[in-house]
Each structure stands twice: as structure tokens, then as C-alpha cells.
Amino acid sequence: MDKDVSKYIRFIAISAALGGLLFGYDTAVISGAIGNLTVYFTLTSVQTGWAISSAIVGCILGALCSDYVSNRFGRKVTLFITAILFIVNSIGTAIPESFTIFILFRIVGGVGVGIASMVVPMYIAEIAPPQKRGALVGYYQLAIVLGIVLVYFVNYFIALQGDTAWNLQIGWRWMFGSEIIPSILFLFAIYFIPESPRWLFLKGKNQQAIDVLKKINAEQDVVQVKNEIEESLQKEDKNQWQHIVNPAFRKVLLVGVALSVLQQLSGINAILYYAPEIFKNLGSTANVSLLETSILGVVNLIFTVLAIRLVDKKGRKPLLMMGSVGMTIALGAVGSFVYFDISNSWVLPFMLLFMASFSISWGPVVWVLLSEIFPTKIRSLALAISVFIQWIANFVVTQVFPSLVENQALKEYFNGAFPFYLFSVICLLSLLFVWKRVPETKNKTLEQMDKVWQN
Image 1 (cartoon, rainbow, N blue to C red):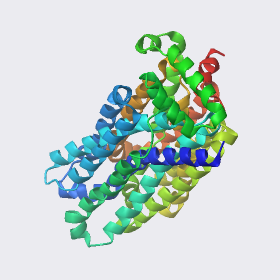
Image 2 (cartoon, rainbow, N blue to C red):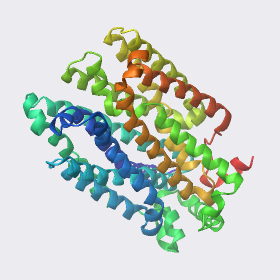
Image 3 (cartoon, rainbow, N blue to C red):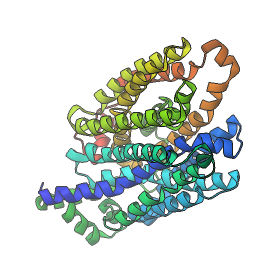
């Protein structure tokens, strides 16, 4: 492939993946603010969970309508819509004096995240050549991680700007308001990327689609790619629901849904959202807990980059299995340290092991698989359903985690270790599931996935 074409495709993928950066930024920004937010609005443990998980309700709504919006208006216009939602959210969550108003704007931002979580990886997969698709779709997870790392450090440096009273009144507002900068950058970047050629062919805009294909493919490959897309679209039925209930396709959908649910039940978001509070409960000061959380974010970033380099070389399945083993060991160890009241200095290394194991496997690889695993006849609907259920699982984990930590009966029996033991067992189950049920998709075109499942 021509170097200029390759650079252009990378530019498109990076621009679209900024939606992932905002995904990570929006979901993790509250980790540094939740302590002050809880005091400012005098929240109960249930309300604290709601302050975080309310955004996930928006994500569920966004995922629910993402298939319709992206097919009706196109991938590019849909990304514009998400950028505007992010801007509105960043302003709205920075100014409220009412907890209810804060929640409403958290939901608005969540809708943007929910739409982006389905449309961005699908758009990149439709643009990318098969031999580079794993890495390019992996940019989405890398961007999510960059957003998380960025906001961890933003939160840390904002917290340093004033004393406890200042952070209680003003600091948390600056944390939420800071999201407007990457939101505007995303809006600007979307202007310069093309519409998905697959969507253009779907809408009968053939010449526009061919013009895009000429920009993102070697000249000798344009006709072949055009024919593959048109052949694929001829197989695609507008009424995808009738195929979803077909036993053969239902099996595929269940694999996608299970990958989505197991990614969330690994405990990753409980740790991302509540990491500062976890470290504080284990003895760290407020500022030290934010710094430790930032270190988690850096490890997340490093191993996500490594995953992007490996996913097209080693394959999807080996990385998932390796990650499951590491997460199982790490969370089991953290649970044991908490149970036996062993020093906090032993907890951080195993939290880092968990983060490294997740970041090289279940973080980026699940998004790669979801963007490519489904057969043509059900692809967009199956992806939307999987992402929708993923956000439901995320909501359950986020809402329930504070109650699991504070439940007196569980505290007496497990000394606060129960959530870590639970997540460790689920990670072990994820290893067995991948081994038995997940096919390898490395180097296969989207159009070849029908044959993978037939075999």
C-alpha cells in the first residue's frame, strides 16, 4: 500500500478514535471528583453509585439508538452529534448547584459515549484494510486509555491548585469542565474525515463511495474492494431482526454479548471509577491516591500500545487467554492482601498487574472482535446489541460496587475482600469461555466472517 494512503488511513482512524478519548475522559473524570462531590451534595452510598452510573444510563440509551442513527444519517454525521453532546455535557456538569441537574448532564454525556462506543469501531473497521484492521480498531481502545490517563493527571493537577475547601467548592467543577477542550478538538477533527464508503454504497451514493475508496486503497485494489462491498451489501437484509433469531446467527450474537459482559464483569470499571477511593480506604492520603491512580493509567496506556502491536501478529484469542490468567491471579492476590490486612504497598503492584493484563487483552481485543466477528447479515444490529448489553453490565458493576464494599455482612466475613475475589472468579470463567467458544479472526476480511461461522 502506498505510504501516503497508509498515512491517510491512519489519520482517519486517529481522528475517529478521538471519540474513544472522550469516552475514557468522560467515564474516568468522576474518579477524582467523586469524593468532593459526595460531600458537596451530601450523598448516600446509593447516590454516590448513581452519580457515576447515571452516565452509564445515558450510554445504554446511546447504544440503543446508535444503529438507527448511524444507518439513517451516516457515520460521520453521527460522530458530529456525539461531539456536540460531549461539549454540552462538559459545560453542564461543571456548573450545577443541584444534584438532579448534575445527573441530567451526566446522562447527556453518557448518550454521546454510548453512540461513540458502537459507531467509532464500526467506522474504523469499514475504512481499514483487513491486514491492518486489528491495529487501527485498536486505536479506539488506545484513545480510551489516553483519555483515562489524561484525565487522571488533569484531576491530580487541578486538585493541587487549592486546599481542601477549594476542591470541595471549585476543584471538582474544573475537572468536569476541562472536558470541553478534547470535545472541541474531536468536533474539529471529524470535519476532515470521509464518510464510510460502505454506508455510501448502502445509500446508493456510488460515485462518492468510489471517490473515498480511491483515497484509502491502492489503485489496483479499488475495483476488488468495491465489488466485495457491493456483494456484501446484496447479502445484507434490512430486516436484520429476522436473522438474529435464526439459531445459527443467535449463537454468534451470544458470543459477542458474552465478550461484552465478561469485559465489564472483570471489574475494570470498578477499579477505574473508584481507584482513588480504594487506595484511600487502604491507607493512602487523598493526593497520593490520585497519584497511584495515575500510575495505573500509565500502565494501562503502555500495555494498550503493546496490544496494538501484537493483535495482528499473535491473534485475538491468545491475547485474551493470557490476559484472563493475569487478571485472575492479580485480583485473587489483591483480595487476599485486603482480607489479611497486609500493607497497602503490596496492593499497588498487583493492581498494576491486573491493569497490564486487562490492557493487553480484554481492553482493546474485545473491541477489535466486536467490530469484525459478526456475519454480514446481522453485523450492525448485532454490534449495537452487544454494546447495549455491555453498558448494562457496566451499569450493574458501577452501581453495585459501593454497596458490595460497604455491606456489613460481607465486611465481617470477607473483611472487604469480597469484590476482588468475585471479579477474580469471573476472570477465570472468561479464560474458559475464550478457550471453548471464541474463533480466531486474524487476517480475515469482514466479508469472510460468514464462512468462519459456517465452519
